[in-house]
Length: 85
Image (cartoon, rainbow, N blue to C red; front, side):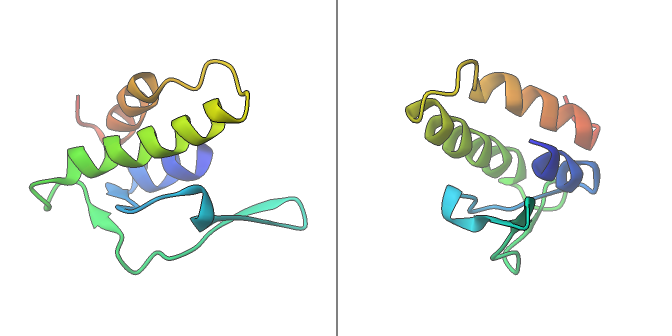
């Protein structure tokens, strides 16, 4: 969530985020495949892509037993981080 929030505060979203783009190295999260990063404000589908990223990640963690991974709630948080509502 913090990596997605950091991008959102910059007005960005990954655009094609999946668990396979999230690696852990020496207990640190590394997000890869960033060349397609999307400007949430400039891209007409920016909000949709941000919501898609949140849904894919929440669904993956929910399928592995993480309680409370709500894509709608995460999308709301990330949109607030961008300054959008």
